[in-house]
Amino acid sequence: MNDFGMSPGPGVVRFERLLPGPIERVWAYLTESEKRGRWFAVGEMDLREGGHADINFRHAQLSDVPDPPPRSTGR
Image (cartoon, rainbow, N blue to C red; front, side, top):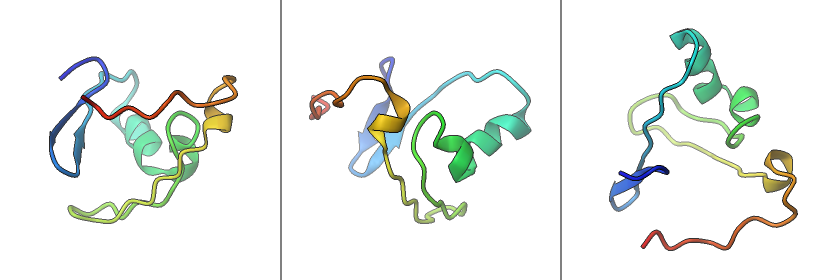
């Protein structure tokens, strides 16, 4: 793992972060689309193991930088 996360296998991304605040607030910012959209990406998530996640990144809403950085291959 580096500062950004890791990919332990195909189709898998793992992030570890220490987040301040009570677990209920942290969970809300991870699982509720509107709150998650303030820091990461909006989209509905089926909150069951193996559930579908529809994540929509909107760079212009998250950064003052006009264009996102070039796509990384992760290598």
